[in-house]
Image (cartoon, rainbow, N blue to C red; front, side):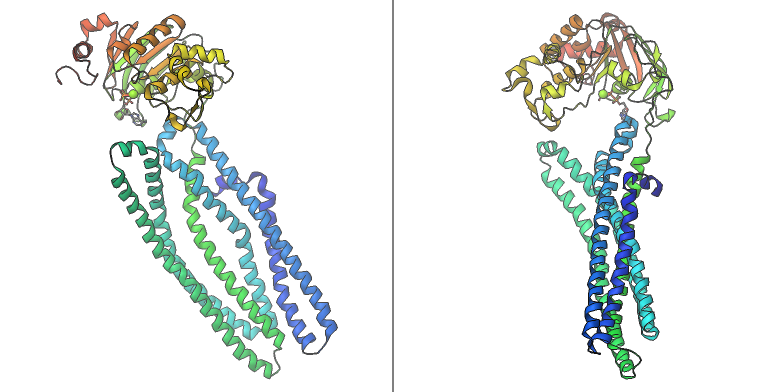
Length: 583
Ligand SMILES: Nc1ncnc2c1ncn2[C@@H]1O[C@H](COP(=O)(O)OP(=O)(O)OP(=O)(O)O)[C@@H](O)[C@H]1O
Ligand SMILES: [Mg+2]
């Protein structure tokens, strides 16, 4: 884990080394000051030697300025190193997420990834800054101050040592208890983030089902849980300060009492006593900082683990050694394909699929919900890899192709498709960044999207909101089809992409396809028999198997499921799932 994260320091190594160096130098100068102070009081004030006061005073100002300079430089480099480190982590995570295959993505929730990229990285950034600045500073400051105290007066310094040990014990005990609660808080945080993310992204559904109160009370419970835990943790943490102050003042009292007697006995000077008191503060404050570092570190370990998980996740799809860069044609073949989302044959969602689709054919795929239609077509553009068997496109196994080449030639309009914020033209050009406006208009005509776009006030420059909230379901689907067409693919897969489009437009789109892109192999998943009735072949899926394969007429003759669905839809216009007998 540490190795994974440390690899992201990259160009900020210099800053990461300079920060602790400057911090240590700052401590050295800080430690000198009380010593010089003692000298001013003893040899200057008490002896009435003004010259000494001036000379040492100048040194003292010099030391303070040097300390200040080092402190500022340490802060500057520390900030640069930690923010740079965070930036690198974030970029590396984001880049790695881009390489994720669908099955990698299945492992992480969206909310989880967002939290990892934001809160967790911020935690690490703060922890890193603390480590660079305080991790070295505090212990060294403690050691320096302690040695100085011993140098001035060993007997009095022993008081500090005893106080230090006692305080360390108490702090350790308090922090340990607080840490227990902090660690309990992290999973709760995740829960809260997930609930907020889910609710906000699905706020329209929440409203449609009038679930606002339910969702609000769910969130209240989650926040209350975090509140309770943090309260308990903080109750322990706040005790630190009074305990600390009690110790400091007890030390000062003891030292004053013992020191006064020593001064009377002439074994200690006033100046020395004063600097001892300053060191007392230094020593105990440093201990406090060390304690805080422990809290911070324990809080960031969970974050570090979650970040490394994302950084170390390797995409389970990769380009082959000598990839094929050309898809010869749009022929598709499935050879004894088994597929499971969990690499487990028992849970296979596709079993022994054998299919042969010629280039340029139009093939309809019908089947009830969960009959694995989407799973079947996702294998063609290699969104997932088969568990066994092989899928061939253009005569080559899909695993032999360069992935970008394959995906540009096999265009999929996903079932859960999204538009991005930007103008319509910008959205279309996801398909082909260099497409001319004329080309964009052409594909929109093919997808029957031109009519409604031209009616919009700004036409092709109309702004689409994030997620495409300002266009209707059917309009969104047509834009998604147009976007896929712009790729000029050899295979076009429409996964339930005209479900929200009216029947007449649906038929118009199909006609346009047949006329304008005759060489493209078209796979159309649909719920309506009318959408696929005229296809060259129709595949009927049932429970992860191919139940029927043939033309409309053939299937009407020899496939019971198809016949029942066709009859129920033509008589009642029912859905695929409402098979005859259900009504
Ligand atoms: N990402 C996934 N991880 C695990 N299981 C999945 C995943 N996607 C789908 N499944 C499972 O695979 C099976 C087939 O799902 P699939 O999405 O292929 O069905 P479908 O025929 O496309 O259904 P629909 O008509 O509702 O779109 C279902 O049982 C589903 O639970
Ligand atoms: Mg589906």
